[in-house]
Structure formats: structure tokens, C-alpha cells
Amino acid sequence: MRQGQDRDDKVLKLLRASPDLFISGQSISNRLGISRTAVWKHVMALRNMGYSIAGSAGKGYRLTPGRDTPFNAVEIRSRLSTEFMGRKVYLYKSLGSTNIKAKELAGKGVPEGTAVIADSQTGGKGRLGRGWFSPAGVNLYTSVVLRPRLDPPKCQGITLMAAVACAEAASKWLPKKPTVKWPNDILIGPKKAAGILMEMDAEADRVNHIILGIGFNLNMTHDMLPKDLRGTAASIMEKTGRTVDRAEFACALYSRLEKWYKVFVNEGIAPVLSAWKGYFDMEGRPIRVNSFEGVVSGICAGVDTEGALLIRTASGRVHRVISGDVEIVRH
Ligand code: BT5
Image 1 (cartoon, rainbow, N blue to C red):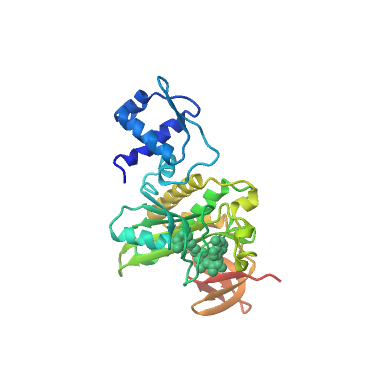
Image 2 (cartoon, rainbow, N blue to C red):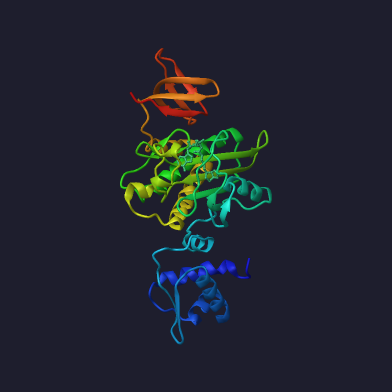
């Protein structure tokens, strides 16, 4: 890391606050408590990242907002309004999996909320050994490190908490709110737009860390998809026709994650579940659930107070499922 690199985002933030206006080097230097030479170095670094910053002797510097904002850690930090979620962010051009990198960082003791982003993943992970299709330049693939002081079994609710955060963040870009599919999918219409993968490292009565991984399809187009996902995957841009600024989306997501994580840790799962139900439209519909105990078909009877899925079978018996895959049965 270049010395002082962590201030690039502060200079960017100041320049962005007055778009199309010149701010003098002296004023930036006074506001950030750094020398004018340091200001100049930050401006040079930002230009190298692709920002268009005009400099004029006697007037100072002016940021010309570009059509394509660079997708990098400085851009994210300059837009972030959270206390800890995403405050430390590592962005890579390509990774095997952001969950694996975040786990490695968690082992080194990084603070709670540390985030990893990859522009593309070569081995993006789904649940149970499945994969996550992660092409470059279009979507968000991120993992955050959490260290809740909760009993490990209680932490299952973190997947539902993340689903609420994802749905709430995406609602800002969508004409109609997305829906959630128990336990870890966000859907746009009937198609999957995001998946959540929570991995926990815990002892009997305490959590060492949780890696919360989220893949959100933002600007991916249908022709990019492999054949097996063509009928089932969707992206926000496909729905709206408008490109989603990935840095802006990442910041919106971290802000909702911080909000709902605090609610979950301080107040428990009840308020999270009541928000989650606002995005859940499967109740009363015929479903088939594949879990460790086998396949159960019936009518979705909602979720219980712990977030487990309930299915009423033809015999009238209600099954409770704590993990599994749900398929909506269409007649
Ligand atoms: C999930 O698993 O939905 C969890 C996906 C989590 C991905 C993120 S990306 C950042 C972080 N780092 C990682 O390595 N992973 C996390 P599951 O419920 O098992 O769903 C996986 C299934 O979704 C696959 O078998 C495909 O059918 C489908 N799928 C794969 N890629 C997709 C995509 N981009 N969009 C929609 N569906 C996809």
C-alpha cells in the first residue's frame, strides 16, 4: 500500500461534494490536515485510477463526474456511511472465492465488518459444494467477516438477516420489491438474482467468526449465462434496462447489512423475521423441500419463530425444516 493511500478516499469525497467546481489545494490541505504536496500526490493517484480531475494554477482541482465510476476500494470508502461494515475493504481483480479470502483474513484477526470484493471469481461457491457463476465486470461478489457474541445455533438467522439487507438494498434499484426464497435466495420475478452463503467457524458455545458471502447479479446479461442458468438467473439491469453502479450498490448493501446485523444481535430474530416476511410470498403455495431428512412435498405454511420453514403435507402434518432447498411446484 502506498503511504497515505487511505486518504485518497477523503480527497475524492471532498472533490465529489462540489462537482464541477474548483476547490483550492490549500482548502483541501486545511480540511484534511495534510500538506499541499500530499494533496497533489493524492490527486495524481486518483487520476491514475481513472478519475477525471482537472487542475488549474490558482484555482485548484475539479472532479468531472464520469459516466463510468471506477470500481475500486477508494471509490467504495469515499461513498460509505457505515460505522464498521465495509470500512475495511479489500478489492481484488480476481479470486477463487471471496469467502475463502475473507476466511483467511479472519484468521489473521481483521476487525468485524471487514469486506472482501472480487471483480470476478474463478471458484465462486454456493451451498453444498455447488458453484456460483461469477463473470468479471458486471456483478457484486462480496464476503464480510462477522464476530457475533451469540450462541452458534442462534447464528443460523444471519442468512435471513442478510436476505432482508439484500432485498432492502436492491429495492432502491427495482420498480417492484424483490422477493426472498427460503433460506438464501433473492428473486426478481421467478428468477434468482442473488444468493447468500454463510460459513461459521465456532466452538461448542462461541463463534470465532462468520463469513457472510453474497453474490448479487447486477449488470449481467442473458447472453453471458451458461445454458443451465438461462431459465433461472436474473439481474437488476435485465429488469430495469439501467446499469447499476457497483460501488454504489456495494455501499447500499453494507449500510443495510450493518443496520440489520445490529438489530439481529441486539434484539434477536423476531424483528428480522417480521421484515423478512414482507418479502416472502411463498406461503400457501405448493412446494417441495429437499433436506437431509429426504424430500417433503406440501403447502408452505410459512416460517416459525426461529426462522425454520414449515410445510403442511397432505396428511395435515406440519414438517419443520432448518436447512434445505425449496422448489416451488408449478402445475
Ligand atoms: C447460493 O448457493 O445461492 C450461495 C451463493 C453465494 C455466492 C457468493 S459470491 C460471494 C461469496 N463468495 C463465494 O464463493 N460465494 C459467495 P445455492 O443456494 O447452493 O445456489 C447455488 C445454485 O445457484 C447453483 O447450483 C446454480 O444453480 C445457481 N447459480 C449459480 N450462479 C448463479 C448466478 N450468478 N445467478 C443465479 N443463479 C446462480
